[in-house]
Amino acid sequence: MRLLVGRIGRAHGILGEATIEVRTDDPDARFAIGQKLQTDGHGDLTITSGRVHNGILLLGFAGFSDRNQIEKLRNTLLYAQVDINEVREDEDDYHVLQIIGCQAFLEDETLFGEVTDVINLPGQDLLAIKTTSGEALIPFVRQLVPVVDVKNRRLVVVPPELNGVVQ
Image (cartoon, rainbow, N blue to C red; front, side, top):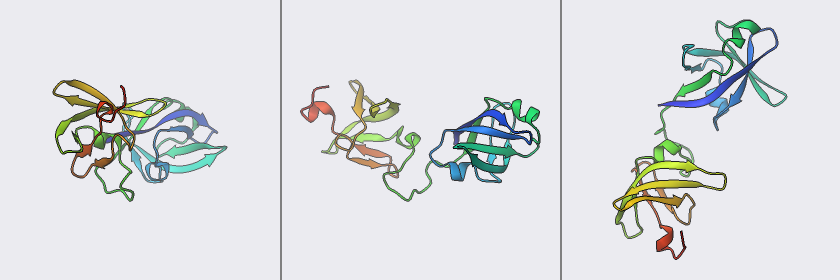
């Protein structure tokens, strides 16, 4: 799967480094020297150098050795090819794309529906679940989603109306 990991900002210095707007929670792995990143319109870019300067990630790319070349990449989105089903160290650590398509069950094992989206809101995320009676939005919090089993593509949900909470 192609995962958005960053955006190239302005050039830094004269030797072909670019500022990077990081859009991943694992920058050490995604922006390692030698890593190939995909772009739309500029082909693959191979990272040749990386450092943090004043809190900003700076990267150099193979074939780009001066400021003018880097400026042509400005605002280019960077993508990494990743396997979203890779085993994670923490069972509570999963990618949002692993949740979409999971079957949602009630606590009594009754099928509730299928997760169609995860809506990111400032306060909390919401699961959009397609049910037989329409779409249900459930806050993605442990009290209402006590079990997330991405390996078996299933969740257990406690919809607010069943929990005595008014939607």
